[in-house]
Picture 1 (cartoon, rainbow, N blue to C red):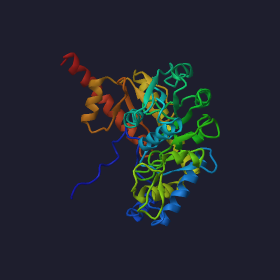
Picture 2 (cartoon, rainbow, N blue to C red):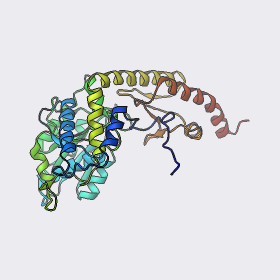
Picture 3 (cartoon, one colour):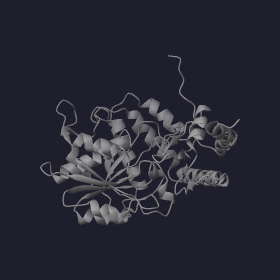
Picture 4 (cartoon, one colour):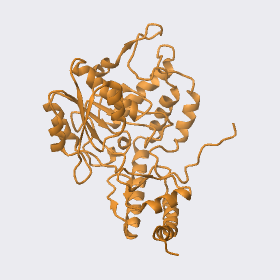
Length: 362
């Protein structure tokens, strides 16, 4: 095979990034190990325990339960599964989330046969506690909040959502898959120490700079994972609580290596760089007359017209759009000020041309 992986020099929409060199090396070394069979592969099992401990420290939780998942989708599905099992399968369980929630919850609803109730967000694009409370009833098994939304980088009012969950005797899940490695360096209340969070998705392969796939599922109590356990009679270990079973140790080892290299000071410096880039880029777009959503976290959404957007795609920029049609740029660790300057230069060059094509002007 002669194909080479795509370079990151024009990737502006991904929530994954180039892994830290130590994470890359660790992934290669542990590629063929299987943390899904910990008795056979005790070295990678010990690394997974270390990864969960560090993720717990990042998320404000001592003695966490959990495991290294394939990503936020798996962690979110497993959180819904825990809540369904806790509620009991004879009950028509429902899950309540804001419309800013990730599409993985729709997958969870389809696979697990639960009702997904979606509440509108407020004017700041965050979960609206009143709207969420209106969706909750005595069959609600899980309330979902997002700490770093995929489209706008917003942080939901997690403590208020915790109160809503408690009022229904439901679990509270926080999807911090992207924001979890940024929020420790902000004033937001988002984690286990700030609110009665039961489960959390937090991904080392996003801002954590581990190799893909390397997600994380955390639980306040190890006992919550009991709802996921199935017997594994032909393995040396007796039960398994993960979704995928066989897993490469690459994700586990790379997560540990990245966090050992970067937590906390390296992640703090990266957050400062990424946030500064996002704020600079947002100001540059505002100065050009585009409407911009204020970047609460290092994600910028702006009202770039569709013809201009596609002209930029034709130039090789890997960009995406929100559901409402805005340009969406995520200032990941590989995104430099020089990349953003180059993007703006192309925007300045292409915008008049794209507009002229639409209007039919010469």
